[in-house]
Image (cartoon, rainbow, N blue to C red; front, side, top):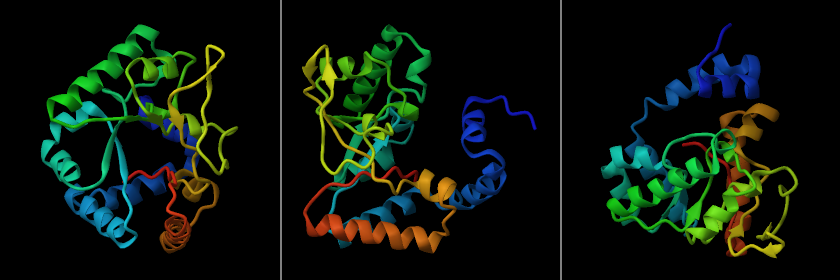
Length: 215
């Protein structure tokens, strides 16, 4: 089986032979209009009196302004997921900076303020955090995806040029959709049960939890 495109190649390397089954499964999910998916997310968040953060690719946001208005009118938050969904490990520092700048411009053009960031593919280089600080991002939810930070129970900061970072990093919950699907091979009802329990615990503590979910 020959897979040439970047995203499919990434999925094949990550998920191997399960990609066909999961592609069929995702095709069924994508029959649901995204407006309905958003409404479902809002309904669940209302039940827990919680907010949801949507890391969104800015070029996609520009093409879907009605959906963006749905989010901005709610109490939920939008974070930058870059301007294009490109892997920062394969582009230069200048190209990274331009991508981040274009994402900020794009969100401003549709009157959305972004304070948080997550790099596409959770791919960071040594200078990505420096760029985030340069452009005054307050927090990041991709650095915490690294294995050495997973499982932490509190926010953390990293070292940038021997100094503690200004940006706050949020660790990833072990219950990401990648882990539940790829590692544990869980069924839908099992994932719902796990996520619900995690949200209930977080709500009790008035805390924050980062799930890596792809609606």
